[in-house]
Image 1 (spheres, rainbow, N blue to C red):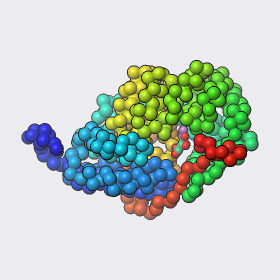
Image 2 (cartoon, rainbow, N blue to C red):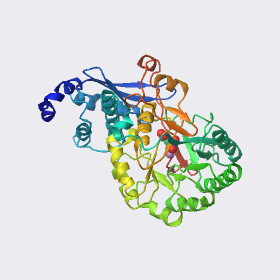
Image 3 (tube, rainbow, N blue to C red):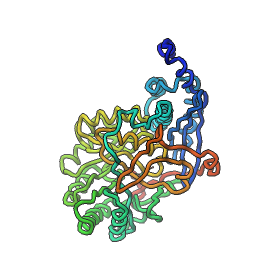
Image 4 (tube, helix red, strand yellow):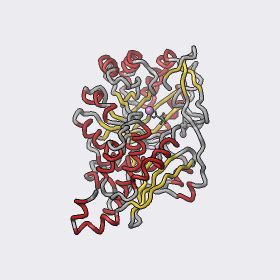
Length: 419
Ligand code: EZ4
Ligand code: CO
């Protein structure tokens, strides 16, 4: 290994400095659970990568601790591509959320290290900025249509130019996206999954009313988004997408599960509402058909769950060929480390669409000091070398892991459904 690099006399010293001498996993729960990988080089430069997989955190922690870290020690932190290939091809058992989240944590930590060594903010390493700020959307929700319309108004007052709207549905006790605390919607709220009951008919009757009121109240300029969260069949999704056309959504997300990528052809055939999908994807192979057949407009796959910057960059370039733009997942279960890396990526990527931005709570922000800032509907990454997000390990140690799983959904007759 590293024969080529070592033969170059001029870089020999720096290769030795870049040798990985330590790596460890930090599990903490400042308001919610996060898994973070910290990699250290001989010269003392360290990098951080997010490894959080909501409701399955310890599986990734073990994958890293037991199977990845022993392979990291002694490697050159500068060989980001080779390290990615080593953990993807070399594992033999490729893909899957646990593996790809673990690879992402390594990859982001290495990009962080290399950027710090270069003394540059990460977006410079990718090719420099394509824009000044990153358009974000916030999460408005309410117990009914009225309250949700008001909540969207609050986001507009705060300067947001794009808002996702999710409202309670009459007859459904616990609709997706509606929180008790408004700002912080944290679905993973109990040790064993909360059982919710779903009814598609009631949902399909409510959502168009919500968006009709939103347009009537807030006018044509605000960008509006909605997340169907995998609950509809393709033909039901096609109907909702068509019913929403008069209200010109920025996108309809996760209209139907995408295990069968071809399902989206049916939605596409019936509607011009823009479609977004992919927060649960781990690989370019999960969306190859969706992209090359132009069945979607935005790809939601993000850095932490899809193999890091090295893989998602490849995915974004492929999407660009088909006029599909990025719209990264950015819920609070993705840590500030992921958000920092995502913002550098968003600042660079030519085919950027939008970035989801659910604000972390104060405890989370204190454990993960960062240099990104919100201004007039956009997030701006900072100029600190690396991705600009750190961890306060002493503070992190004060918040022990707290087991929590995501809810499940059943139909009224008890059949399991997609949550
Ligand atoms: O349910 O991140 O668009 N955002 C979402 C999120 C997801 C959670 C799952 O861990 O769909 O709220
Ligand atoms: Co979603």
